[in-house]
Length: 285
Image (cartoon, rainbow, N blue to C red; front, side, top):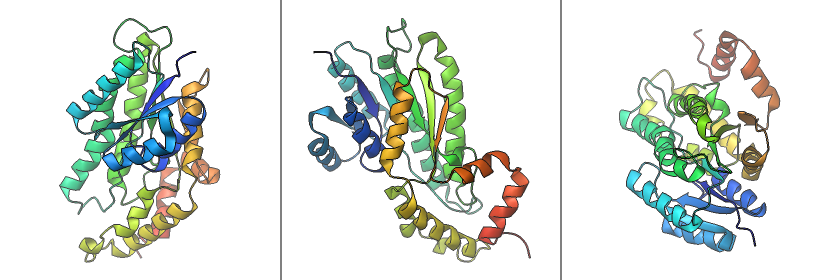
């Protein structure tokens, strides 16, 4: 019997990562999924059975990530990893002028440096770095529509997604000698717990700034997104396409509002400034 193709997905406890595991397992892949808590590892193992192997690491912990890579290498038994999906991430919000620097650094560490740590650790298993593999794997980086259009008060998150777009483009060209492709999947609003955390966000620290009313409007908008966004499995299908289609695009946008994406791709930035400023009450009177 042929060995199942294997994929590593980071940040699979909930949301897009969980959706990716569900879809990929359903398509016959074996998924190695990273989580930070043993309880999540046990829960997902019970849900997905033998088709899923948990990896316990935080993407910012280089030693733990490399230990996870060794675990996967041993399980592959010389086979090539079919894919690496860099999904793990957090979303930090707040006005840049007042944002605590430790929160800024956390955002960069998880969403950008973590991607580099994971990619360096698992790239050799995809066929990068040595002699070209007969069937090299692919890297799928989970960006966002916020990687091309940045909303106010989301500067930390959008900075990392803009950065991930550039990282992906550079890496795709660097990996040409090995045949390892790099594809970006850029979701719009997805119904995941990352948006629910908007309800827990403490905006009182900004109560005495000009931004207080606009921040509350943004918080309500984020809560609405958490209820009306796409199901995570929809992004999982896009990830599966990016991993398996013969000639993938370099970037897949998956959004519940194609018109909104069209606006952000076509409208002049100054026009978008005015639209956004009007909606949030940021324009001077």
